[in-house]
Length: 311
Ligand code: FPP
Image (cartoon, rainbow, N blue to C red):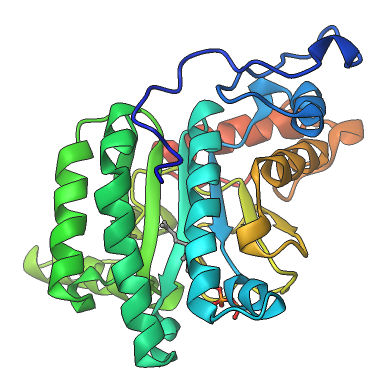
């Protein structure tokens, strides 16, 4: 079944029993498409649409445990994980989050049994085949980060096709990390920089933060503001090591297949309660730069422009 039917996400999002909800004048309620139940509607009421993250990154963990709890094979957990991923992609697109990165397969995941690796690769191809029309229709641009040259040929071909089809889309960027490792990404960036310096005969070349950012797989994307990890593990697992320098980290005990739209909205409500200081002082001590919010805005702008600055 295609959860994510071929339709645009631009229609308003009717809320069940909206009249029973407390009214919160002054906050911008966020319209979504599918009818929200009471819990989702209440969470939406708490969200400020002006302060959503520019980039959410998610470590989708716990598929195996989800299956184990139900006495199912691990692969059933991965299937359920794809369903959760669809719901999160759709929700982020409807919320107009500019960028969502999902950690689908790490470099370390090759150590799993071959049958599980093969299943994950098949699942990804199945996902692309089934969902690409809806992704495209909703103006989502698909990007893949990681050492894709080491992926099976058929997977590479499907990825290349999906990236080509969606290349001109201007809506949310959906970044899938596949055969991804943060340290490998840094090594690749440094080598690309060194190659460029050598070929330009730059004897006195020195790297700076901007040059490194511009050679990462994520060049041109904002750094994640929010890193979500499901299933309770307190690790970053070699994910976006450079880019998460100032990300707010949200760890939930919820296993990935249970990470529903409501759980994402909960993470966003939590994110909006955080005070982002970027090494400066908090709002009570707002400094000449105009407080931490101004510093945060400046940081976001400078990262999109490829510069790094500490607010
Ligand atoms: C970790 O669970 C999850 C993965 C290895 C990634 C699989 C992700 C999906 C199937 C979602 C697909 C995403 C897209 C973009 C379609 P685990 O197996 O490590 O769980 P465990 O820690 O409980 O064993």
